[in-house]
Amino acid sequence: KNQVEQSPQSLIILEGKNCTLQCNYTVSPFSNLRWYKQDTGRGPVSLTIMTFSENTKSNGRYTATLDADTKQSSLHITASQLSDSASYICVVSAMTGNTPLVFGKGTRLSVIA
Amino acid sequence: KAGVTQTPRYLIKTRGQQVTLSCSPISGHRSVSWYQQTPGQGLQFLFEYFSETQRNKGNFPGRFSGRQFSNSRSEMNVSTLELGDSALYLCASSRVPEAQGPGGEQYFGPGTRLTVT
Image (tube, rainbow over all chains, first blue to last red; front, side, top):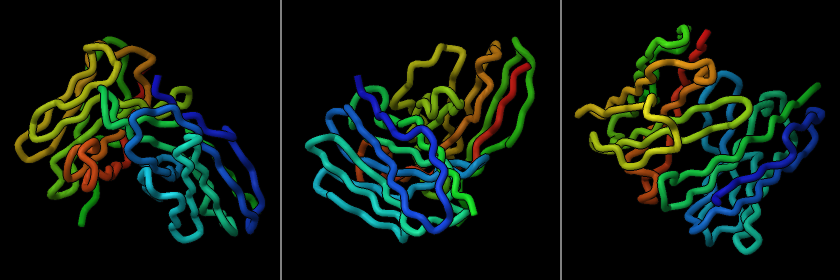
């Protein structure tokens, strides 16, 4: 069964600190993996998209890594800001079946001063 | 350019009623997907439309239906509402269906918050 598991479920960090969010997936065949940021009350916004051949991709202070062999991805946030407080959702494209996109349940990040 | 718009933003209905939600995609986008988001289940795929045709459907009962018009605008309908249908309903648009690869990146609207009492 295609699944995406994210950890931790929630995280609280101090402003200025770094953090890493994890994503493990069992989706096959794999097409691409995305990280979305969702602010409260808003729709998700894409941060990065990585295909099978990409190991690392950055978007400002956000850096995503992908290990297609172990089917793991991480999102690293550097020098966190209060505005980083949001849910971060890992999404994997299955490229087949009735559900092309498989969503994780997200990690709720709270950055405090 | 304007993003994905969804109307209404908030809706309160009672059990047994039906509801219609609307989504206007980004100009030039022909693919529209609908998702249900609840705290316990996260985002779940409802259906995807491309050029007025339903391409994919998730595991939801037949009470959930949708359609797409020739201008790519889409509506979804939920009949005989249940308390468990309370959720944030998100619409996402892309130039081509996501599964087709490049150009399939989805852009989400702000969602419609449906509360069933």
